[in-house]
Image (cartoon, rainbow, N blue to C red; front, side, top):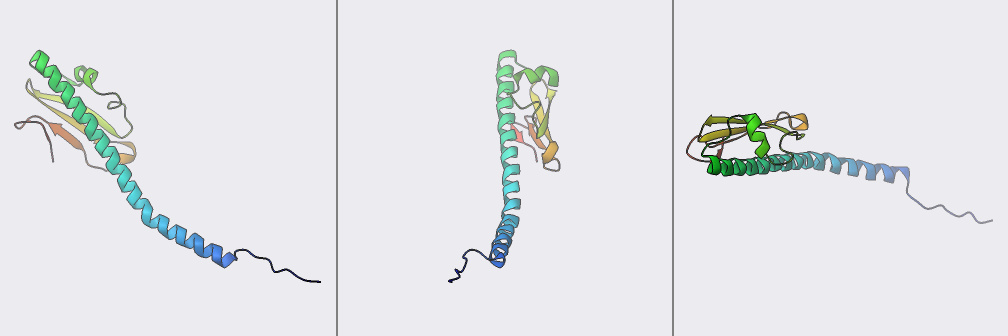
Length: 127
């Protein structure tokens, strides 16, 4: 009677592979999270720029920016208000200047507040 030797992976080999995959995941995950945060911030900045363009078009027609946040919301791009990551607030500093402040919320809490203004000589991102 012949005994056949079974083939396959030993438990030690499987544990080594699991450990290697765990180490790689521990290295890659923080980088992935940072990439996701940067992507969400870039998306918010793009929406704010689109919003600012709509406000400029409104000013070109009426010679002034909307009076308050409620009036300006009608000009906002879809998804800016009610989004999951930033809460925007429009404020008119004068008939010819405005500021849009986007405060992080949800999983973006703790990130930088985005502020776009036209107060000091032209459209710019505030630091």
